[in-house]
Length: 392
Image 1 (cartoon, helix red, strand yellow):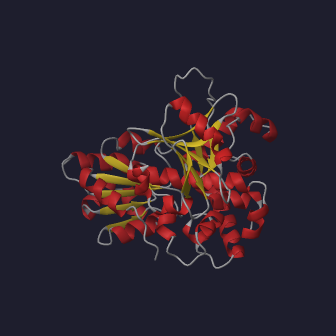
Image 2 (cartoon, helix red, strand yellow):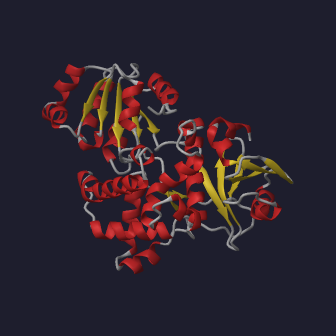
Image 3 (spheres, helix red, strand yellow):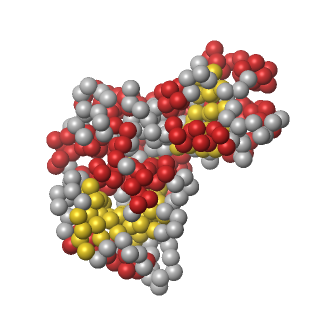
């Protein structure tokens, strides 16, 4: 059993709120995590008729029957539950740690969560496996997590063929079943084609019109589909950072796959040897590190934001983390020994934003200085200790 590192955050939120809603993509390990973290709690799976039907038939009576300390898995399948839970909670708002809801869609998609449970539930985003959770597994190191992605069933498969089969099944189920269960009617063929196109522009500036022309649909349709992928935790739109520094800055977000295992599936990267020589290798590494870094930020400093920085002239820094009292810029390189030349964009960003320190993350083992406040950091070391971000 791989130990997830979100238990401390869960316990803190349960002490402060009547309910906690745990969100993340399907099959990222939410159920396993919560049943291990709260083994004594009553567990109801709302995809299972024996659990869902009594709750749907008379939710107030059923909630009274089960009492407190209840886990509702796949809660978005029973939206009427949220308003009833609100009434139960409001009868004694001072009582905390009563309910946990698990869901595979963000509140903007499941509107009832944000409307009915506002102020009554905290939110915890649970991603697929992070490096600090699997680094002691005898699986081949960070490179294995990068190639396979973090979904538990994909990461732990015995071979690459089994992993490919799982990903195909997962993506078909998402497109053909999961979206429909959320009340989203989309063309399965168009969604798959768009997803494939997104794989080829991973890490690029968002341009809905360009993809719409290739798909033969309106840019409104493309935006709607990508919003769905974002709100089901499969795509990330990374916003640009704005500041009044007298420069023209890019205002479009960048789009990244949140799990590189899915990215590799759509790119036809079915083995580590193919990844080693693939032209998208650098952008895959960038997407992988960005997702791991943002997850680390949200775990240690919930609510803080991440950005990228890019001028109209194309000078760009891959990741800019808001650590509250300061901004910290990161350049991400797939290079065995980054040099001063690799840090030119980082240096210009630091100058323009008045930052004293910047960091270049690479896949090597050693950390070292490039001078002028720039430090090269080992990806393995940084991701193994998310708290280290606070010391940068």
